[in-house]
Length: 530
Image (cartoon, rainbow, N blue to C red):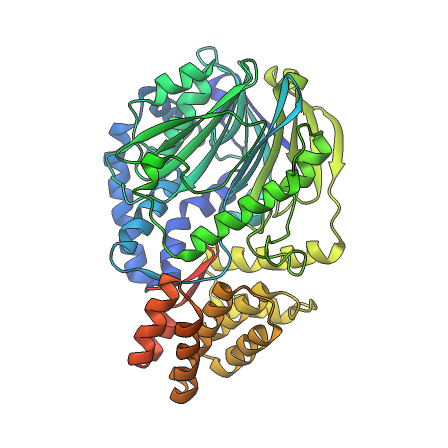
């Protein structure tokens, strides 16, 4: 665990930050390269960099000054910096815009952040948080606690990775306000809105009570869908701020146990919610049900309970039959923390993905607000060695893909592994999609048939595997088998995305170009059919 203590702007200097920073800077282009030809991806990335120059003007004065200082002292352009920082907003914006153009998906496992509030006694609450994001080993190899304590701000403790100036995404300030941020999908998007990193910065560096949070945010709107969750440990109350480009709603947290994932709970904002596919609904529902299943009817919890909760990797439907699925901890959990301000500690996961599986290190908050990092204790989660090996393999494949190294080398990583992938539906599906990308349709077909024959998936996920198999049958010239599968999907499902494509391919054969447009997209964790 590294300490990045910012008591003066000169402390923003982050020696050796280039490798991880360049990964995040190139992420937009790398993702687009997975879905289109490299020239087009490069063109889009170039256009966004031009837009970043224009977007600079709409930043708040305080955040703009912070970024300018970071850029100057680390020798990078402010446009490059903003281009990197604005990625989450741009990703969500493009997803919604693409969806309105009849964007469809073949889903697998959706990944998303988790926030839980658990009482440790009558007067104390633990703010538990998993952040799911890109980065894999680039993020987790340099877990960092950033203490931001300039003279003109409320001092804060922020969880990030070395050299990435992220303030307020997972944080607590000296006034006792803890904070976590969640991406949501809404049809109400606009490039005129504020960037989430800017709003997160403003809240954590200014707010000293819940009313302050509301005052800061009440007139703000975002580029896309976001939620900021704040808990005031001194006031013993919290608020959820759900935001879109058109609206904002504040929801008081009035439950002793509270769990939040990645979907709106405000009746006002629910109306504009955008579902890329049914997997978005299923994933949030399953993860939320699993969290409440784990906490049951209890009123109070200790730090071991909190760690056990956010390190859970059981799918609500699949139970412990597969460590991949709609799980709280997953291969994109890059940081994990438990904050108990009134008991003066923070627990931070110091592990490769998932960051919440392995060792949690305990630190004193009072010391951190003074710029001191001294480990008090640690808690280790109860997971076997095989689990770690599987996560390590998936992280390698993800890092390889998002670094632009291609499908053949990603497939080679799986083939060289001595792990048995048959036990995991996700690993088998991942390998089958990689085989499709390298046009080994026979190999992909064998794996997909094996998944279906295992008979362990729910109707929806099983239908997606069947749809992919039907498409392969069409491409290799076995039309009768394809039609049989499409008929089964139409008879067994009521899910809008499955019915749409099953009906389409039932009436008109799936061509090779359609099949080849499927790409593994792990963050949204479905296979995009563009």
